[in-house]
Image (cartoon, rainbow, N blue to C red; front, side, top):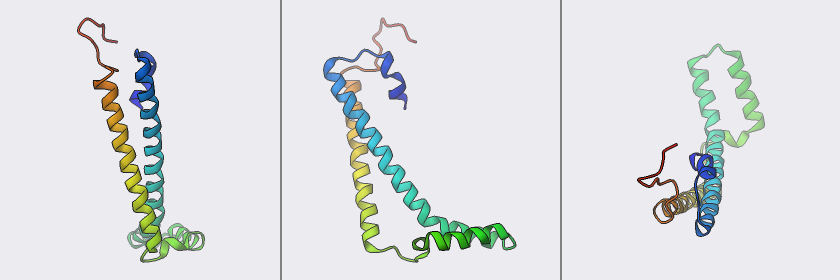
Amino acid sequence: LSGWLSEHNTFISAAGHDFLRLHKITAVLATIVFLVLFLARFVWLLSRLVAWLRLAFPKSGRLANIQVWLAEKLPQAYVSRLPRGAVVAYLLLAFIGVGLLLATGYLGEALVYRFGIGVYSSGALLP
C-alpha cells in the first residue's frame, strides 16, 4: 500500500517500470492468495468458534440459531477431519502464496537497491 501511494511521487527509470509492474502484480496476487487462505480457514473454524461461544453463553438463543444455520448452510465446516484433497489444495495454495511473497520482496529489493526508487540523495529535499 505504501508503494502504491508513493509510486506517483518518485522518478522511475524505464527499466524500473518493468520491475515495478511485476512487483505490483506479485503483491496483488499474494494478497489475493492469502485472503483466500484466510477465508477458507475462517469458514472451517467458524463452527468451532460458535460452539465455543455456545459453551460460554449457553442461554443465548441467537447463538443457537447461528449454529443451526451454519449446520444447514455449511455442513462441510462440521466435519472433524478435512478431506485429504482439501488439505493438499490448502497447502499448495499456501506454498504458492509464499513464493509470490518471496518474489514480491525480491522485486521490491531490486527497486530500492538497483534502481534507487524511494531513496533520497544527500541534496534532495525531503517531502
